[in-house]
Image (cartoon, rainbow, N blue to C red; front, top):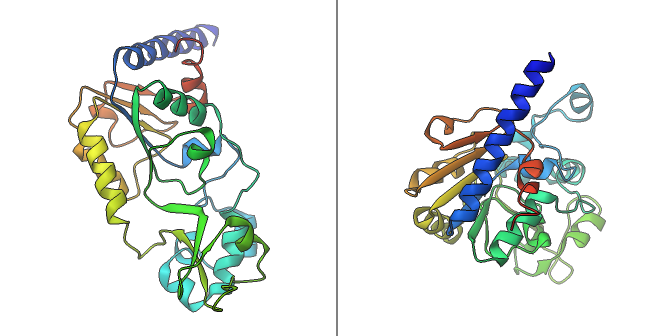
Length: 254
């Protein structure tokens, strides 16, 4: 048992050293991340279903978070949305902070995220492509008036516009909806020009977002995820450790 633990620690040390080396020796780094980045900030994956979930909801998460369900049953949509999607007290973790630091140093060109929590910007990242939108932005579907997260959280049931009375919808991409084309174009350009692409905290199971990885033509592909991904076999480096721990190794060397 002790020998096995020692071998794992040695392997992890080698992987971390290699990760640090690649980061230090390269610029034009791009990060592509998913739910695993935010779980370390206390935000659970909304797709996780247990016995308690089945006592509270009659439909699976993917059904409730669909465009058609939002239209037909906005009250139930917002009940789930409030309980499972909004975490106003969450704060950036080490991964968010070090990515912002890499951008500040001129080494990281962009963050591409499937998350909707705004934590990358809260950590200081400026060039962030939010593939699935953000809970921090909400718009009236009639007059396009903007509303912040607090307005939605304080509304009874589905929020309505204080100006025209129209329904207020979060600026998040629901199932059955397409991704924003300008965001896609920016993400594709960043990935295609990257020398290093870091995939972190995602199993790459959600399309079309995961398909953007195909545009990478650079030198180093790094995958940091607790479980295997379809891209592992193409990666220069695979690290199956908590992403905050991996990025934390950069704190004293940059």
